[in-house]
Image 1 (cartoon, rainbow, N blue to C red):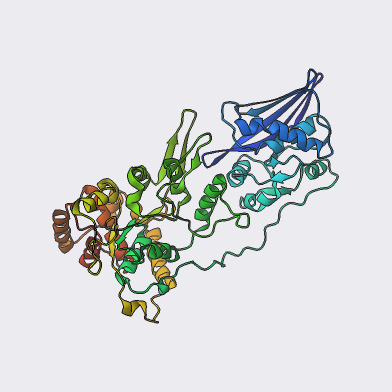
Image 2: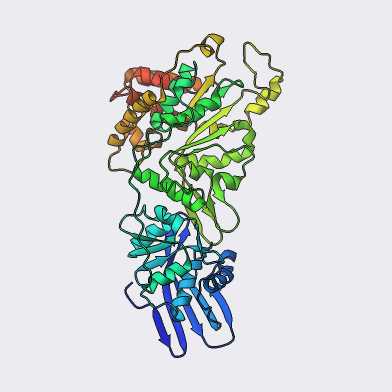
Length: 518
């Protein structure tokens, strides 16, 4: 990366600078070659760029003029290499402009060992660009020492250690910096505030009653298990699902970087939050499209909500209303990734999320309620409940009923157990799992156990074997349901600090299975 970037070939001038692209969640180093030759004025950008890349010609032309520089009216050719990889987005505006200024001799400076990323405004200002974090990461991995990014993206790029990040306000400032006239100062991160965490919107201490539901949610949080809440309207299903976030342990630094990378690529990273510190909580409406759920879309494939909920919670309220589109969740729930195949490329996004669902027992919501009459016919109730397929329900470990709360508990001034206490037990259980799976893939929980690991860590004694045999026969468990019950029992044992799974742990896991044939 130390060779000169400007070549004089006869009456032609060629400059080379580096930029970056994003493919899936991974960055790719891109070489931007600028050729200035004699001939009729023209401006061509080649290298398999999309519409946004082609439109960069007009943005670059106006930005150079409005930055006090001269736009070369000659035969201009810009090549984005590798040419067989599709380029998308406006991040190439800045490297193209720098290449033109260097090739035309208006800026004299060494751009070796540097990468340029950013969208240009017509006045030469740099605007926010999506995907800066994975771009900066690949630049560092490929030996780039310095990366120039828009000023508002500097904090995000600085998350990559060992990389000099230079925030660039305008193209004129960058030209003066490269020419040695007015050097730009590298970005200096603000003091870390890792210990500070904003309060959660819902705390378990504010939820009256429903102790058995809170216990089920604690078990789900401790092992990363999927859970569904079934109950009448107003019983607190949505509130408890949102309180689950306060029971989960904080993100590790590696997990936070993974989540931040996803939000950066999606363009959802808040300006004042360069690093996502809180686990995601995604609650899509039931009208969300398939592409919105799992990713994709026209042009460049983008992550969907299952990936945005990575290391967090995907909450589907009014589950039956989602209809057949729920079947797309079956593969991510098993593989913990989403692979999108297109004619031009295949991209894989992570999707290790907890699925939390809530639903009413029937369309009117009062089926089975002792104090409110249901107006639905038996056939209508059956059709409503069958909107969610058996294979999807089989991938949910915990099924719990949420009844109405009586007046005495609602009117009581006594606070319930706070989320902090539940979170401490959940964190301790996950620490036991982390120690058990030391040296394996990060973030492993009991919900991710494979068949060999189940054999090694989920053994039952004689009493447990007899209890499991009866449960398999009475509940008509599938092979998947059998293994999920073992994993759930392992989590309950971890919460109790037990090395071995006892009959009491298995009995609690059995009560979380649905009471209908599977």
